[in-house]
Length: 123
Image (cartoon, rainbow, N blue to C red):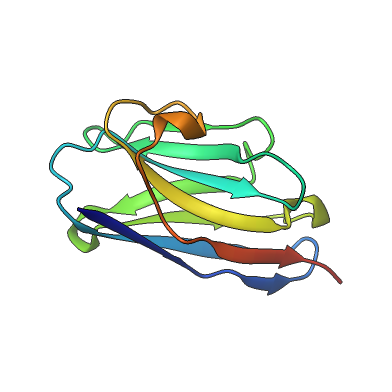
């Protein structure tokens, strides 16, 4: 059983930064990638970034490329999403998830999900 817990969300002004954390526990021996997603009210869940377990290959959606950076600390079993130059349209609940076979940013290809953390970008 795998458990994921996100943290680090909150209220930030436009142009500001936040760092989200995703702490994993349980059996992680066969996971392929960890991804970050977000979902705003009334919108579909959107894939943002992923990082593979082996070589640390990273992948970003165009909407966040250049503003968000994904990283990991294997010793702590934690993946981070550093978010910069935040915009009001970045307001959403942010989720991390694990896939056993894919690094693509498609929610259906992820098997385990955290409960999410709210990010609100507003002045």
